[in-house]
Image 1 (cartoon, rainbow, N blue to C red):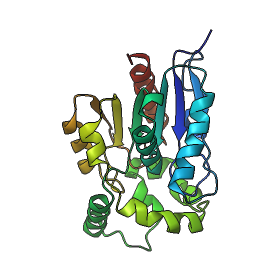
Image 2: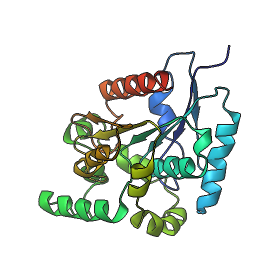
Image 3: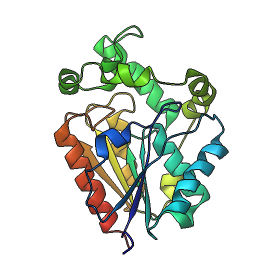
Length: 233
């Protein structure tokens, strides 16, 4: 029997290996197909989209949902722009929707909280409760970044805008974000639900930019994703 839905997870970065499988493997019912993408070492947007397409073409279900976290949300959106007929819905987790606006708000929030460039990465990416559970999560993860790729692609991210996509989009979107995320500020993320009835916001209370660190949050996110995927037309 074919799976009713295929979930393809797109991790953030760019320039990072996949980290989503560690959190979400085994979180979904066995009848769903779950695929975890690992970014190749490239800094070309067309190549990024093509490698996502390789995963989509291998999906066993006729219904494909892209689940993008952070930078992975850009990949999900840009893939949907180019291959609208190949995806049935998007799940965007702490997404990058307006690069310049989000960068400006991030800098403002850092100043207000006394966070400097020299501060631990955990202060910039994790909530206070997450830092207690995993005090080196962001540091351990982000030190794996291929900085060459990041530096090449960051100008694209900093100017990126998904507003027109949300305004024109007809596909179901589940927009998940951490209440205490300051890197892609929740205050901005929650506003994108206004563009269309197809966008559903879901806030993870007390979570930061990686809202799957706490076990209770992983379960909540997985439950929301599975419910969203199973109710697609």
